[in-house]
Length: 203
Image (cartoon, rainbow, N blue to C red; front, side, top):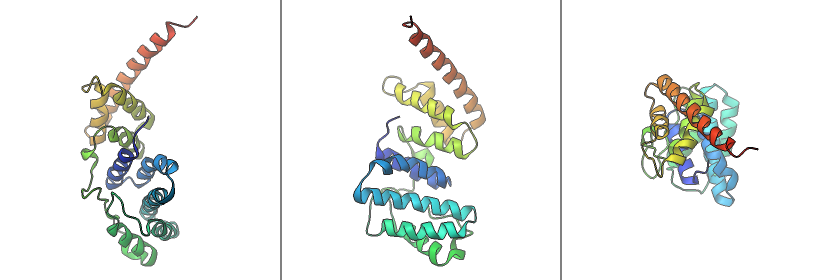
């Protein structure tokens, strides 16, 4: 599933702001792996910020402090789409005065001046965020990944495709159990149709 780095960054910001810190790392990692130079350092710093936040929520003081120190190094001198001033303040406090951050959520990220929520996302960022939120909340991430891929395939010619709607509704948190069941039914039917077409040319 090809998604631009900008959409991956937005997806990760919204997922982070929803409190799914490990999932935000997963949104940014493909862009980090493809990046070089200063952009790679910038993304590495964001990933380590998310990892430090995750460790704070699990009570891993040593891990959080080590990552906070490392993240500050990667982010030093960098600016980008994300407002890093509150991020740096939190990282310094995490490193130097852990007790100040241990019982508080890290600051939410602002992207181009806006504090993104998952409801602010549009496709294709939705297709990145939905499987990550599924995994973080105990749902079948593979199902959402498949549904999101079908949604992206349908979007240019069929913007009202059930995949487009169901994946978006799941991300928004509206009756996720029911949405998952409906999406599973649509995915099963779509895969069966595609398997039937593929089999027409088998010897």
